[in-house]
Image (cartoon, rainbow, N blue to C red; front, side, top):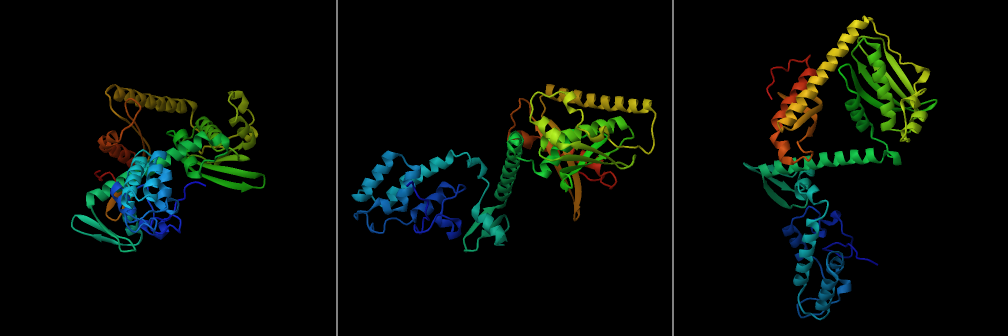
Length: 402
């Protein structure tokens, strides 16, 4: 056997949302809501009054006790039911206390604090009424609840935090279990490739799985903004190898290079050889010999600059990186939270400008707290807006105040 999870208001049916809100207990239910549901839950029909004895084995509440109550409590309520020592509400109160205590310590408790089932149903079915300072939600069964507007915003904020944390947790899980056969979703692969290979002259702009006559192929589209062949050569090699290590299993990895300063370029990699290398722990630079098809990265600049200019450009880029690292060390010494903008963009929505960004926050000490994020929101917004303006410089956005 084992305890069965049956509907609270009709024990003949399984516990399910499809039978109404009073038929089940949700992880997001408050203690008060749980009690309201249990108080009207169906019990042994033979127990009409407190003095009537019952049969606990046919009572749904008794089966729930087996999930949430101790053996001593289960024996106690069973004896009280058979011998009419106390009523069904007393039995339900013991169960209610145990359920509330159990849900308080569940690993999902912090994940569902922002979820409100009636609010969700009201939004889904269009049952929303905006009052002066409150919002009333109505589900399709006519149940209503009025919520103070700031509390609604707080719930959405909490849900957004939960969604972001779950997305991050999923990405970490995929990364850690990639050797077991889990493949990165294309968009996650694209984001990691873009962040890991980005330089002032190289940027990954898309990743697309394809099929060719020779088998499966992952195409990585990159944008180069330099006439220096050596820089492009190294970036293409890094991108192709990293793509194979992040997402193994393709027969071929193809890097398509586009640039205003050169003809369309490309580089192709042997996916089978790279997949074997990705499974090894003891690899050296010599092991990668031969993974590049024909040993060639095709990239022909329209104008070939003197080597001395390329070297000067390299030194300037190196100096800029060193200044950035020194700035980070200075911020750490001041105890400031380090903010790194991975990506940022702006777009118009009616008369407004909407800022979208992907940000990494590195607090002092390593452990991040929600309060630190909130206290750094202004800095995060300004840094993201600055990055977005650089990307969207062709539009007249410099007069936008954020």
